[in-house]
Length: 209
Image (cartoon, rainbow, N blue to C red; front, side, top):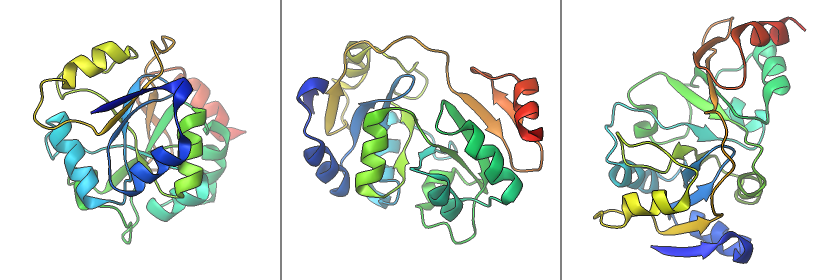
């Protein structure tokens, strides 16, 4: 696994890595994540191997805008208006996936839903824009272990593993933040599955505005 300092990254090199199906440890809005082309079947399968993740556990996906989200999930006008208010941000929204959603089946964990998010992180935003592809948004850790904002802790988890990411971007220790909020929005009312920076009351208020 190649490690490069954030200050020395070459965006074109990272974009090419993603297009080749490589897996990258990358800083996100909260902790380090494993980023890859979410449309690349082999890349997504490798993430499951790298994380030792059970196939029943789905992987969330980063998208560049609501238009891209609508290509993957069922989003009506009311949902779109709500998403426009909360994104970009540290909120993953679980929605019903489209029947013609062109992502590898393994990404859904056998479910009819998909977790989507538009991030604030500038590097991820640039990668989404330049590749024009949805990217995986799962944490950079072995299943059963905690994700981390410490690059040293992240690298230590993978250093002796048979399956490893191809590239790690070392942005040092990320600023400590609450975990991202996860919302179930399959139906008409959003419901918090994992509490982060938003309360249920705040979400419902935003929906009404």
